[in-house]
Length: 180
Image (cartoon, rainbow, N blue to C red; front, side):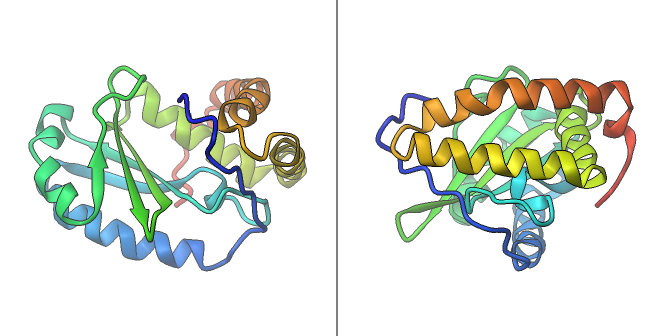
């Protein structure tokens, strides 16, 4: 990531995030056209009642990554910057800034790939386990206070928690559930 000066801001859950996702999903589906298989709201903004960075994370399941790559011009036209794999093989990453602030991340994977299932598993597991989701929320708040201007340290501080619960979620087959 290497963005040490990025301010880490974690805020209480905003119920409007779900509406923002719905609107953005329609724009993304139009831009991506026939490449789209499914689109999901993921990340902390998709988990009720927990604190999150106010950036919508979106999982885009596509038929083929090469087909998705042919839609980069359309993605740029709706405000996204394509970043290619951006450190994760078999993924395409896009981000959007609004008024100089990061507002959206898209993680595109081929439909039903391990990458897609991992994201859905973690989200579904957190939605199904409010006590664990609350632990995650408290961890994020603590890390944001400890590392207000160091996104790398903030992310590193969440890593073990995410890996532990993602593994549990995958073992319990939460990536195969479709919870919105």
